[in-house]
Length: 297
Image 1: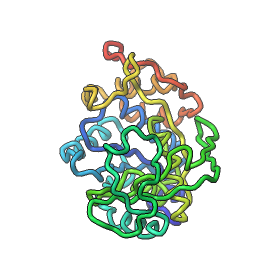
Image 2 (image 1 turned 90 degrees about the vertical axis):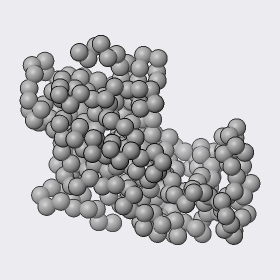
Image 3 (image 1 turned 120 degrees about the vertical axis):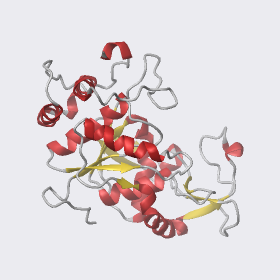
C-alpha cells in the first residue's frame, strides 16, 4: 500500500511521534519524540506529528497547539501538517466494516470483567447488534511472532496473550487498537515508541493481519520514570518542558538515551544535526536512569 509522500524525501520511510493531547509535553515526551525523529531522519525518511485525539473526553484542544510549539522550540519540525486521528474516522469505519465478519457484539460491562484477564467469551455467539454494545474481534490460537529492533523477537498466541478484544466502543468511538493499527500500517514504515506500549503491538498486528495490511517495523524504547518507577505523565504531575531552555533539554534527553552528547552548549539546530548524525539505536540503555528534576538544572 502506498504511504503518504513528501516532495524531497524517501517516500517509503516515514516515522511518527503520536502524543495524546491531554497536557503539555514533558521530558519523557521529548525523549520519545527525539528518538523517533533521529531514527527516521538518519534513515533519510520523513517525520510526522500525529495527534491521537480519538477520545473527545480526554482531548485538551489547547494542548494540541502547545505540543506543536514545544516541538518546534526544540528543533523537531514535522515534514507535513500535523495529523489528527479525529480526521480519519471514515478510515476506521471502513476497517470496522471489513472486520465485522470476524467480530461479535458485546454487552459486557467493565465491572463484569474487571477481575478477568482474558475475555471469557460470554457474548461470542451474539450476531445481532443491539443498543449499548461494543464490537470485539475474535482471536485464534495460532502462534505468531514479530521483531522489535531493541527487544528482539516476540512470540505470542492471541488467545493466550490478549484474548478477544474491543475494536469499537459502546459509545460509538473507535478504540486505540483499531485506530493505531490502521494508521501505523497505512501511513508509516517505522514505529519507535515507549515500551509501555509494547504489549499493544501484538493486538495491533492481529488487526493489520485481518485487514490485509503490511506492518511497519517496530522499536520500543524504555520510558522515563521517577525513582520509584512511576511513569512521568500528566497524572503524576510531570513538569512541562521549559521552552526557554531547549538546548539544555535536548542534551539531557540525549543523555537519557545513552547517546553520549558533547558537553559544549550548541544552538538547537546544531544539537539536532548532531543527534541525527550520531544517532545509535543500539546505544539506548535497557532502562533509563530515573528522572530527578534537580539533576537537570
